[in-house]
Amino acid sequence: MAELRLGPLLRYVDGSSATVWVEASRPCAAEVRGADGSGGATRTFQVAGHHYALVPVTGLTPGTTTPYEVLLDGTRVWPLPDDRFPASVIRTPAGDDPVRLAFGSCRWAAPPADEADPVGPDALDTLAARIAADPTAERPDVLVLLGDQVYADETSKATRRWLAARRDLSEPPGSEVADYEEYTRLYYESWLDPEVRWLLSTVPSCMIFDDHDVIDDWNTSAAWLADMRATPWWRERLLSGLMSYWVHQHLGNLSPAELATDPLYAAVRAIPDGTDELRSFACKADADPASVRWSYRRDFGRVRLLMVDTRAARVLDEEARSMLHPGEARWLREQALEGRGSYDHLLIGTSLPWLLPHLVHDAEAWNAALCRGERGERWARFGEDLRRRADLEHWAAFPSSFDALTELIAEAGSGPQAPATVCVLSGDVHHAYIAEPAWPDGTGPDARVLQLTCSPVHNAIPLAIRLGFRFGWSGLARVLGRRFAGHGGCPRPPIDWRRTGGPWFGNQLMTLTLGRRSARLRLEQAREEREGGARLRTVAEAELTR
Image 1 (cartoon, rainbow, N blue to C red):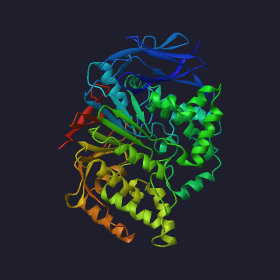
Image 2: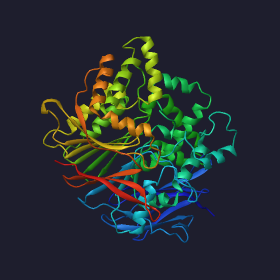
Image 3: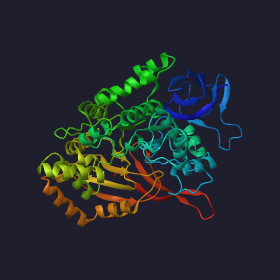
Image 4: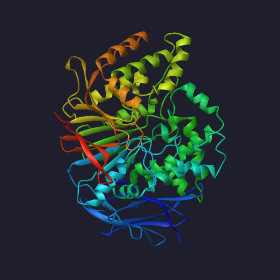
């Protein structure tokens, strides 16, 4: 009998359809049945000995909440027997209802229940507990996970024990994951957490990778990539990372219509074992990043979300360095400007913040100039070493891309059909803040533009990060940053910006509530309660529209 190994994950949802992702223990027919007669079924496909299905659900009614169950070969496998959680449901949007979108990044898997948590309560676990305790309470319409869903290079004690039983950890890559099977272990550890498993079964999710989904500072520079490609274990690690991401995260980002025309998805499902087909795709993506698009667009009523790949889509040539290769940049521009007037809020999901503290921004621009050779070969070597040690690889480290994104945001937010807000959603930097840009001479867009940064969901927050980012926003830091920029001959950015909220440190989530021309932000942190357990506490709220 087929068993449910992982999932279900509720991924895409619109007014009448949805997709539900599962992993089964063997080949089988996977089916989703809604209590209202909606549903769908499909056969599993196989990758590296694992059996997956992305079940299309049709017949849903807009504005309804429908409990559902999952069956494998006709046997019900979800809800689990004696499950302590409420029924998993599919909630479909209706008309112009406000959209509630929660987001964050950087989540270590929570430890087993009998182990102390060294980094405090998990914000996703805590959100799940709140929703489960009162199914009628406010919940997100969608959960946006902005990278580092798994940590291939920072494994837990339990995973290290599992790896040690499989291979010699004294051989590279040591306690980091090495292949596809080891990646699946990371997803089991993360998504079989009972609270997170239930949460992902009942709240739709959008995902994009960041560096730790493959390795810290993935694609920092051309020199970094050359060094990694000379490492014996790197190729298998990268290919396995891309393959497992496609299976576990990317497929669920796509709509049923996009899935129906996706040639790789069709090819993998058409053969008994899709491993070689998927591996060939990953090899092509490695050799030519422009051949693959991991970025995608989701529309939630009058809210447009553009999730942007800022890792695999980079151009690393120092003379043409860009966060996005030309095709990806064109795609982003087209999606942001298409049908202006049909959306009230434009959200750009990029794991890496666009607007950083001024000292960090100027240091990254200065470093990019050094690595480009503006101060000679010796400074270039110093710059490359510093870039890797200090993680100087955000938008500011790609100056032309920073300027292009700034220009696009201004254009998308200007004119009679401008949205009410343009918000850049980011994570990565293990704290939260709000920053607002200002264009010179009042030439800025009509929309209110904001950088909203929120991380981690569940991770460590070193003292250096707390001190560094607090100082980074100070006036003294700004003066110091301009000195760095002057040494590198860096022009001033085309905009100025200021921090309007934060920095906040903790395991946390931001939630946007977006109405027709209104936007409200709430930041919540997971905190231990004196009587035991954890609770999400609101630490900041703000109206975002003018």
